[in-house]
Image (cartoon, rainbow, N blue to C red; front, side, top):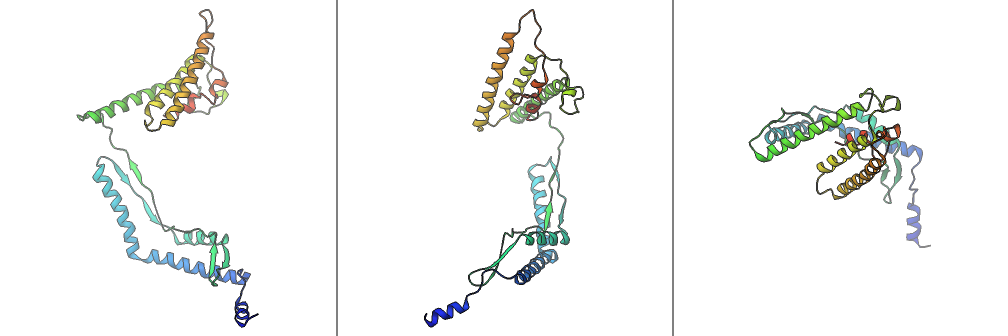
Amino acid sequence: MSNSEEFRKSLQYSSTPTEEEKKKIIEEYKDKLLKRFNSYYEDKDIRNYFNHIVAAIMISQYENYEQFGINIPYRYKARTSTKNKVESRLKEAVVHYSDDGTPVLDNMPQLNDIFAMKIVSRRRPPVLHSDDPQIQEYIEEQRDNRDFLERMQKFRSSLMIDDNGSKKASNYKYECSKIEYYEKCKEVLTKLKEIVDPKATKLIEYYNNKIDDIESCLEFLRASHTNDEPDEIVSESDFTNPNFNFFDLLRRI
């Protein structure tokens, strides 16, 4: 073995630190990280930066949508909370040395947690009329959708003993016919298809297939009905039908 090879071999070290070394590396990393976060809390320029961000959002909102209001409650995270999160993540960290002997902490996700805010939109007064033809068209569309939803919610209430109660067999009313029930399902599916973005072709195709399937179901029910016999009444299996469930469909409106 040459002198240079012997020298390189004498410099080799284990890539895995001892338990004492791990504890020391983790403590040093924790102290360094917490000092960095503390500097964020104490730096007036950083705090002003976040204040300006919130102000810019609010100004932009009011400039572009003057009839809408927003509240933005915000806060700087508590130092204790940041400390706890750092310590929690360090418990999962894997410590080892790189090829040049530098300590490395793996499985230690980046922590960006000094600021939190929530944007709360305040509803504007409803616009019921506009001389702008396009806006008026939207108003009429909204009115139609509201009337449709009211009609469907009224039907939903007729299906349940307590319309605010749970969807259980004991809370269902078994009074309407299967034909009426599935016709209402078809109406909701048709409305869902109408309000879908035209670019969502796969979703439109999905609703088309559902409408075709439910129409086949209705054709069968109508063919089974005779003038001498009343329409078949709904059962629990209709209310829990995973393919055509009025309650689930209505929630999508």
